[in-house]
Length: 477
Image (tube, rainbow, N blue to C red; front, side, top):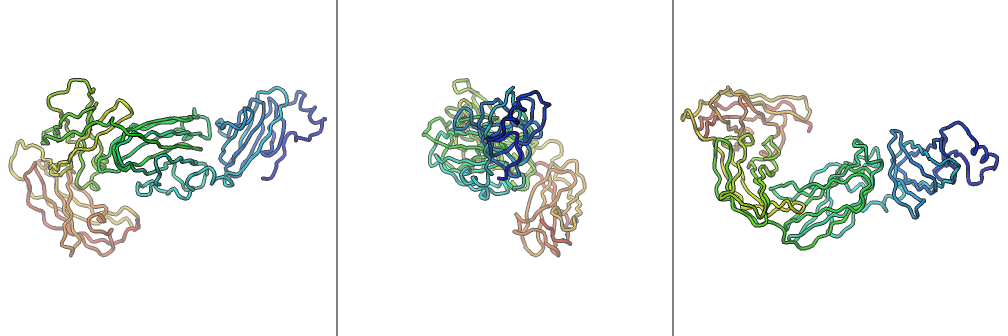
């Protein structure tokens, strides 16, 4: 790297050294990033790096290195107490010292591109630019993973890294991680906090307590008791270097698996009864629409835990364990997968395997009129967004105050196949992407047929008249 001017080199003239020992006005002075110089209190010494750089500083002086936002840069320990190592993004930096006299300082800078393969277990090109689970990087228990996050301004690399590992039996998994941010840890807007999350590869997701690291943490540990299966490890938000390793050992800390005993419709939602499980402090209820991709509720889309009752293992349980999935999350006439699992919150967070599921169709209990609702009057059209990425078939019907929900069917004309979904919208809904039902997106010239019927609890109207919508522009998704 080309040397810049600096205050005094290792072979500087005595006269110049003398001038620095006198009282002079404070100044901003360029300093070399590869040389031996002298620094003193009152002056500000300036570095500039065109690219991310590892800077090694050896000196007895007490000093700070700040970026142009006055964020203090965090060092790694060097080979001795007077040596520190900084990993810095490109840009300008200022060094200040409290030393009243001239103190020798030695600096050595290396572009990170020259040593990057030594710092990262996986090449930065290996990490996908998306965060889809299907693109997670496989790792093994016992493997050490090192890397950097968000050190380059221009690379298209998300701050979320996602890995994938598999357990062939129930295990207690421990993560030992070091994380070193680029800048000081009191600034919340520089992404030096780091969230660690474990997600199971299953239709029944759950929220393991995330491990939050902060600042200059070294050798932090967090453990989970996990059942046999495949898991995703998400590491995100930290800006700087990191290193972690997963280890495992046999465990019998998982709660036993509860069983569903009864599922029923109530005015408040779906009431779920289940049995007691050993070693449980609580229970999670799952409810997933069989048409998950149609739901606007991410909890139903992912079959996440939507109820959680807490007990203590030695406490008094009620005779019947029960929870209710709120009607606000449900659509009348929709069929759901219902399941339960036990939770132990005492050490980390441990979950039992999920119970056998039960399919259940939710109908709001009848009250008032017991007659089937009127047949809806229907109007449809294709919304043309001129080739952008958000076209849809717009569906409208007349408002019926007695309808609890609507069943919508649509078909690609000539396919002889109807796709179905339910809606609790009062006056209309949309079809925004037919790919899941017909294997292809909208295409210019296609004609779709649509019909709707109303539901009042389990009472169903006749189908409306079939209406059509023509696609006039192929979307550019």
